[in-house]
Structures are given as C-alpha cells and as structure tokens.
Amino acid sequence: MPLLRSIFIFVIPVFVFVQASSRIDSIDKINQTDSMTTDSTYVNSLYKTATVNMHDTIKVILDYPKTENNAFSVGEKLTFKVRYGFIRAGTATMEVMKDKMIRGKPVYHIQARAGSASGFSWIYKVEDVIDSYMDKMGLFSWKFEKRLREGSYMVDLLVNYFPEDSLADINYIRYEDENTIRDKEHYQIKTPPFSRDVLASFYYIRTQNLEVGKVFTMVNHDNKKVYNLEIHVYPREIAETAAGNFSCFVVEPLLKGEGLFQQKGRLRVWMTDDKFKIPVQMKSEVVVGHITTELEEISGINEPIPSRMDY
Image (cartoon, rainbow, N blue to C red; front, side, top):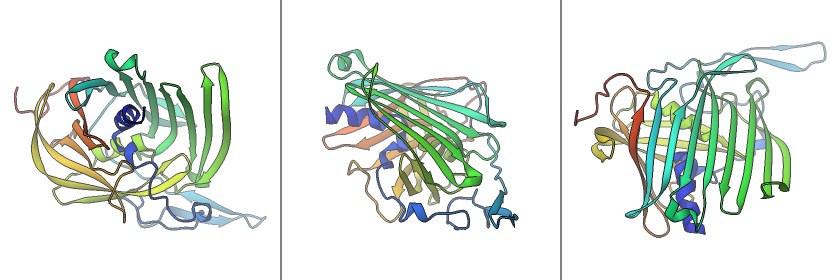
C-alpha cells in the first residue's frame, strides 16, 4: 500500500520527508576535530578545550550549547486530523510528556503518535509512535525511539547519542510478526556533537525567531544518514483549521543543494506567528494528490494564543 504508507510517513514527524535524502559525504570520516557549518547552537567552535593524555589520546571537552525555549512546555498536546483529499485517513498527536533524566541530564520527552482511521484500518492499519528526548538546555538529542506498525511493516529504531564521542549508537529491529524478529542490526555512526533527530528538529525550530525571508540551516540524523537541512520562512498566511483561525508563517524544509523531497513534492508547514509557533497545518504533495494535516485540538497551553483570530 505505497500511497497509504506515504500518508503516515508524512505524519510523524512532518520533517520525516527528508530522512532518506542528501547524506553528507564520508560520514565515517567525521571526527572530533571536524568543523561543520550548522545552526546557531554550533557556536564559533564546538569544542571548549582539547587535552592529550599519557596515551596521546585526544579527549574533547564540549562547550554545551544553551537555547532559550518559550515556545513549548510539559503538558502541551496537539491533536491533528490527517486527510488525503477530502477523505479522513487518520489522527496524529504531538505531546510534551513529563520531564525525564538521561545519563544525568534533564530532558524534554516529546512523543508523536499516528493512527489510521477506522475506514482505513481494515485496509492498512497504522499505529506509529516516535519518542524524542531533547536536552532541556541545548535542545539537542540524547535519545530517539521510533516504533512503526504499518500493516505488515513492523520496525523499531532505537538511538542513543553520545555528544562527546561524536557518536550515535543504533539498534534496528525488523519484525516478521509481533513475536518474531526478522532482522536485527546494531551499529554506530559518527555524528556531529549536538545533532538532532527529526522530531527534535521540529521542536527546535519552534524556539527560533521566525522572520520572512530567513533561512535556518541544521544537521539532522536518521538511521544511517546525516544530512543538511534548510528551513525557509515565507510570508504570513491565515490558516483556517478545526481548532480555530490563526495568523501563521509558512515554513518549508529544503534539502541544502537539492530542492526536492523524497516524495518529489513540496512540504509546507503553517506555524503561528507568536512565541508558541504551533504547527496548525501541514500540506504535502504526494505522487497522486495532496495530504493535509490539520489541527483539531490544543490542550496544555494555559494562556491565550496571540495569533488566534477567532476568540
């Protein structure tokens, strides 16, 4: 069911469209002394000091970034309906769960879920869950878990990030059925310190100052890929959704130096033009038609949303 699967690949998270494209050359050559041009968290130098021990082994002490976050907090939950044309295909949620600790570091736990609607489930049942654990100070990734259940396609991807080693430790599991492992792989790849998974990238952009014409550049990681991603900010538009009408910036992720997504179409996101930068609508072109993800409900935000126009 390629078309139905494309619908749910789109849903969580929205930037997952770019996962399979534009791998940075020679990932295995990226090491602790490499420099990369990325977003503002990669300040002047990634490394505070470097010392040599008695065995002539370089030990890197990182200068951890700090990113101010006034956009989201624990308890926020966004519920979306997913449409293919005029047909409701499913429901998706994005939620900021309770804070957690990972290796002694406080993290945001972001969870995204997607499920097929009853009319689709009998053809192609989907129950996908993605969990991202973001450093609360620097908004980079410490851990990422993706559990996909899409028809007979069942895959787990479990990633732990080690910034001081420029390393991502990955377990990939493909299942024959719920009780039988078909394929299992453990591997490590070099990643720049303070890399972000695709869901963490989405929430990081919400903390940034969006301005028309502005372009953000960041390095993303997914599975065996590290790739450059550009985020372009376009003029404001009014988004009319089931949750209300909002004044929004239109944001589009583009592959740096490429310009087309894996699905050969555009992906645009309408984000409120206030401090929250809530994604209220997402539209993508697929092989046949368009997929729209539209906000239905907001909970966990206990103050007025300035961009909302229909209070």
